[in-house]
Amino acid sequence: MNSETMHSATETGAPYFAISAFGDEIDADLHKQLALLQELNIGYLEFRGAWGKNVLTLQDSEVAQVQQMCHDAGIRVSCIGCPVGKTPITQPIKTEISNLKRIFEIATALGTRRVRIFSFYPPNHEQGNAGFDSYLAEATTRLARLTELAAREDFLLLLENERGIVGDIPARCHALLQAINSPHLRFLWDPANFVVVGVAQPTAKYWSLLRPYTTYIHVKDALLADGAIRAAGEGDGQIGMLLSLLRDQGYRGFLALEPHLAHAGARGGFSGPQGMAYAATQLRQLMAQMGCEEKH
Image: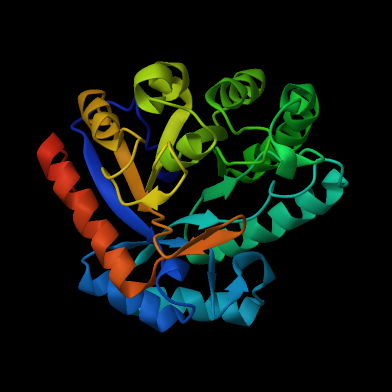
């Protein structure tokens, strides 16, 4: 695999943490996204969309514009936050394969080999996650197809835990990752997303289970009582503990800010400039408390 993809929780060497951020949580306008990242001294963009358009719908000319604007701003794209896998598990997989091929084209143009994906919505997922275990086999088959494509094209797929999809709780995330067991499919740990589905003490109880697969971290927090989204360290996601474990285990990779402080929805969230600035401040303060060195 291309060495650019190989940041992980088990990589040897002195640990470091590079902060990235979802630009579309700042503003729909890419210029405003990049300007705030420069102001906050954040050198990486988690790219999910611009100008009100999802990354998957961008035309080649728009992708080229994104690339040029990032280059001019001195900001690199850390990962593509694509929507592949945030679709019904009953939908033909050929649609997702086609979408992923397009995402790979966009990722290549933007200089990253990392692509975030999901593990599909079971029927009636709005009514709760009872019965999700029965969809593990189908989700595994689908993710295996996507992983085969990623292996051929030398990309790293990052499987995010998320409410309403098959991989919502640690046990199902582990079952999917263990079944596929590919270096081209790794885990993206989102502490808040575990909390909002009722997982208490996610780091203390489940880090050891998912650590071997985890190569990327999203940073937002949440309250177990009502699922309200909070900045790092202000909820029940045990982000301080997570950072200390990552530090001790030699993590060398990204902490991607996805604060959702103004709005949190199934298709993404929004924080605004002030919300993103606050989220960055809170994360850096927590990193300092835990002795985590930031890499710029």
